[in-house]
Image (tube, rainbow, N blue to C red; front, side, top):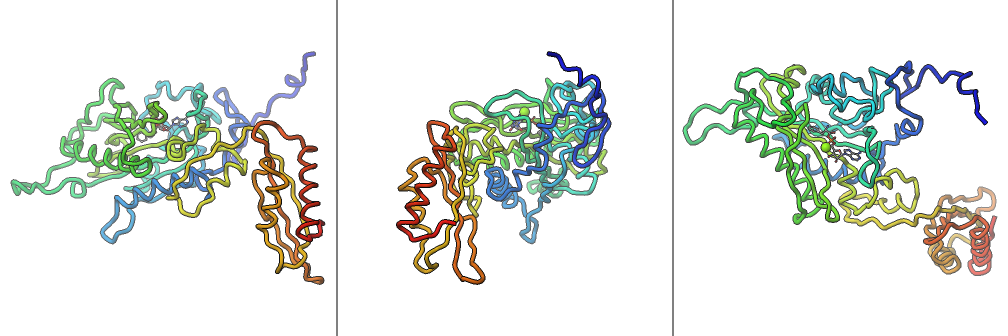
Length: 424
Ligand code: FA5
Ligand code: MG
């Protein structure tokens, strides 16, 4: 039967995103599912593979670029909310007004003036205008894109922008004792080139283009070989972005497939002029953190990053982000979690490892994890109580709660008999 309630009760006129209310219009296409990703901040969760990947990439940048005092030159900005204006995401970056990438099909619009950023480049213009010369932006980005193991509608990017004066970029002409070469020709900046040409910008001298290109490509390639190993196969592919010229993409070989891991190029001089930057040139890159993490840890599917499953997250609980690790597949069947609390016979004679051993013996392979979640000392009796969380999961089937309860009761009984604990 057909329901008419939808037409009687008009859809909400406003929508709340990042704590602000917006009037819906014909461009609005964000939905509750997409909005639920805002604030997860996976790149800032200490035990997350994206956090470790980000940390390692930042180490590379900080090591390569230091000031005279040996301090890193890059400012890292990683907490900007993903809500941006059309102006920030497209106009400031010289994306032509009629360019297809502005399409409602490809983006999540809040309304016709606001959207969830489609790339971290959306913040380039503002940060340049604020006076920063070297900065990194890390954040979640949102796209209506194809669906496969390498694409997800919400993913994370790291953006790097580095500016140079002529002094910083080009050495004095040692051979001839002549003056230092210039970085700017004095010709006007033209804005984006046609997508099918990728010639250097007229505003840039050949020396500036050569030095920026070498520095940019060496930097990014060093990041790839540091994380993936010296033998990693990489290739540079010419690309087009309205905000850089020339532009490239870097691809790496992953399971016999070439996977694109970043886009980059020489910043359009027009963007720097608009931001009020004088007598400097620069490069920029934007990389997909998930793609790097997939290669680094052998993670086969991009959806896994959003997992709240402890079988996944506990694998990345390491202090040192440089720890070498390969992901182990988690069973596709759901977890079942049961807690057990008991009084210890006496804190001195009880050892948690004995309990872990017992759980493994009684529960067998359906036990995925055991962790001490609470320890409590009774103020009057002085007795100690432990609470353990046991995560059950079968590798080949879905366990019913009743099957799990049988095993859980057997563990309690055996612990009572063998470890002299008193189950609460
Ligand atoms: C950009 O987003 C540009 N802003 C990059 C850039 C910055 C170029 C600065 C020049 C200067 P692109 O759409 O290609 O470019 O995305 C950059 C990277 O994000 C890709 O190389 C890929 O690693 C990753 N990526 C793109 N789409 C997805 C997706 N749906 N899921 C996961 N990762 C993705
Ligand atoms: Mg691309």
